[in-house]
Length: 400
Image (cartoon, rainbow, N blue to C red; front, top):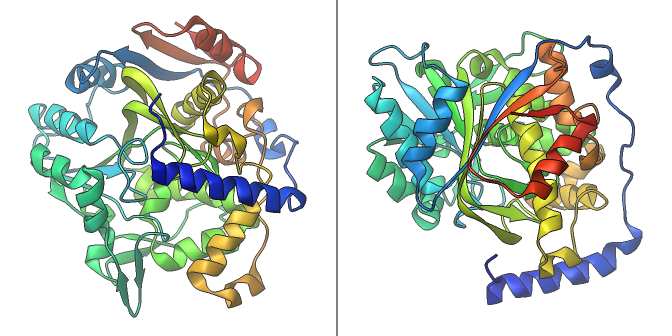
């Protein structure tokens, strides 16, 4: 595990001060399972690939893992593909998608007939703002700092930052299911143009959402006004995040999610926290977002227990998640935005799919309640981690 930098040490000190200040400000936490999910009958088994490779084995990871989750039968010669990255901030991996993974995945797809490949995102509102009246900073600037810009150039893909397209570069996308987005959500127009979408997330904790992997990456699609709705109407925060991914404009084009990283971000997130050295390239791949993120969230819980850092002294999720969400709303959209604020109520991360308000809602929309999720393993992993995965969520993972 890498030692925290001086700046991160100072931030940690600030966090400890905040912890003392917030001691009496803890918010409620959900302990009950999702009743709508419990009404589903168990369906077919799920599938997720989990593998470890040597240092810098990015291409080897693609060659081994992608065929396990997709035969690429959907990819016709010349089809366009959008690689949706996680670039919340200018900070380097694991605060963002691993740059080398972009190069490896683009190469893999191009060798199998892909035409134009785009790669992009829009950074979080704490770093980049695009409004009707103008823009503050840009995702391209973040890319220049976190290494993703140089990686996209090396991959010979096309950089596509949503904030570069201006306020009118988005389309109002309507759900075809009962939704927490009554006025629709504003998504980039590139989704109407591209043939396929692949998610390339990172493995990280998140101070508001608990963790951020493939499902949470979808927030990057949203225009500023939709991001405001997500955070301001926080009572249904987790359901709205799930529903972005189930919107037809994304759902019908998303082919698989592949996390490739050599580090994980723990304790706080989405930007700062302790960096866990994965001792090589670890891959998590799945066609279904639920399978992918349930495994990723379970792994994060074990990693957090496996390492010790200064950041262990203050973890904002779950008790202080609403406090920091309120702060984000007020500091980003102004005090007036709090007049219509509804609190964020987090859930316990340790209890599995039926308690995970985001994944269980997405699974309910899919009509998907797996009896078991097969985990196809490659490479060696700590036996304690395997024991943890075998016991997680009432034993939902079948370790192949």
